[in-house]
Image (cartoon, rainbow, N blue to C red; front, top):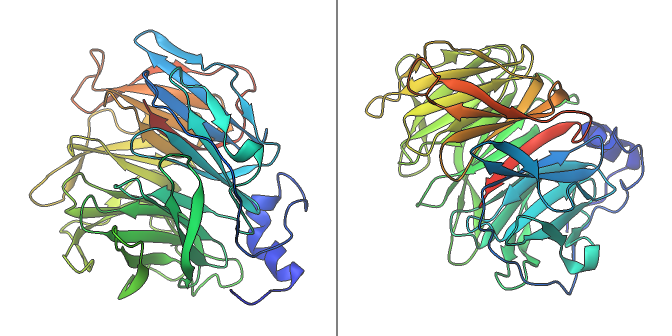
Length: 387
């Protein structure tokens, strides 16, 4: 169990997560598993789920060829601001990190969400700034701003979580994203700069996860930021597991690195590739042909074609594409046709683009397809897609 830290120290590192709800819920910082829970189903539609910081909820949207509609009983109110969201590969369960806890939902056949564990937290005492489920669907990795990372096993019948081993200390910085390679157990955790250590934090932690036992450990590899004070945010790996993509502020670019069997990273020729201002999220489409970067500061998406043999990126005609205010996260739908965008600053809060649609001037280009209106959701910091 990690040593206790002062309340002021805890509040300092967690302020970005706490500000939407004040000081409530920033108490205990030990991990506890809770009993109970119920099984999840498998949705039969095509859905996006958005974590809403301002309203303390998760909003669900069903995607059709004509637009998006709210799923039954959406939004799903937690009463506490989400900080991260992830979904199992089979679409049965969604997990939401908050200040002080991890909650779980089962996904119904109509896309509706039901809280697990009678509405109580599955895990208490951890405040994840990033959560992700491995490709096997058996393990959830959560990282908090201390910074530390935890691994939890997922009960596939109930969705309940059980901590495996002790927490893993990370290099200095605030974890922002976690990504896995498709098949060999490599894990990358991006770290933004910390206010407490503005010039000696940031980068990408390289880890391994044994998908049979859940053993989680750091390797000797660590990717430093290009310059002191730069923050690393978005992470993505192409479907073949050949390249890691890292968005980095300061240089306003996406770094592309080839992945060795050990997890070691080597930059490809031409990297970093310029994006818009404040790149926060990056996504490689399911075909491995296109790369999209959400630029939070200037409200755009930079779109690139990816050369599979070299890792080089080439800007797509029409890029960058305008979004709402402060796009924070991206998700590709399960039909591999649409791109969902969570705009933390709204206008709109959530929008969907078609990828290379009939009205797009070039393959991989984005065409506005649907968007939310009004004030629900609000403060949309993250989005996932499932079926």
